[in-house]
Length: 414
Image 1 (cartoon, one colour):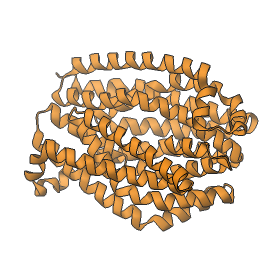
Image 2 (cartoon, one colour; image 1 turned 60 degrees about the vertical axis):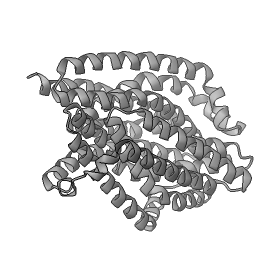
Image 3 (cartoon, rainbow, N blue to C red; image 1 turned 30 degrees about the vertical axis):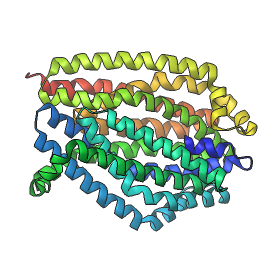
Image 4 (cartoon, rainbow, N blue to C red; image 1 turned 90 degrees about the vertical axis):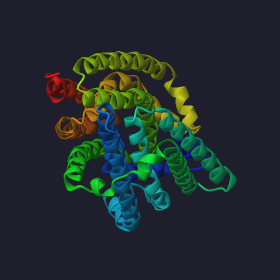
């Protein structure tokens, strides 16, 4: 959002800059979706180890996650050329947007090792019931990112390349500070880490089997949003810019609700690991009450002030006027999506990842993609938004149906 807000206030060609960030971000969404288990899976495994009182296992999970993060970051840098070629052979957009997006990609890719390391680090702290360190790191990273963006764009006259460098600097700053905090709080874990046990095949197999389901689930989620972006690009640079800006309202709400989703990962995993069915059920009821209480004010705020919030992201009146007919969709976002976000957290904490995967397969392949093709033609951009809203609602409904068998049935013996 900081990248978009900085570029959205540039006087010339804001639609092209916003489109470039949208396409560049699309690439990284796909890339990091593959490794999303480093955050979510690490939280679930660590929370269950914490709940069972097994600190040795918690240390082994940290070691495995950081090992995968380092290998993944190096591979992404090595394969940056074919990734760029494949992406822009698939996506159809204007030559200006593609050029700016490619420039953004080749700079930001160098942050991959730090970004994946942060996934593992934050996931582990959340699993250890410590949300303060991830909060501090998130605030630090964003402050550095905003400051670096402003310096590169307004100080050095750069555009999309400037915000890419801002991201790189912010990610490495966060990772280095995060590792310093980890060593100060849990340095003994590194000293006592059993590297032979960390590489044990049975444990690695379970680590990757659970995380494979998270990877598939997240890839399908990113596929849905990427398809939305690709269809937007085919409607022209203005619609691409409009939809990119309006999606930020969905992401903004999801980031607020992520506080409860992350709490769900951490606490549900702890209760599940300790075998406390009644505590897990009570927690689930309360977290859904909070989700409802958060979503209603967001819907009202988006309904009343959506246009004014847009001015924070861009001052270009042409883009804002193009966005005006689609603003009512913003009020629908929190109501239809909050259940999916909260269930995600609970399912991840209980490592019920096969059910998450199946939910996403149905919601993406049988709901979202068919609706896109059916609605985008007769309804245009409104059709894209309707398909996205039904997709988010379907995810929450399907996981509600899955939950009794996928989560609570396994603890009935306690």
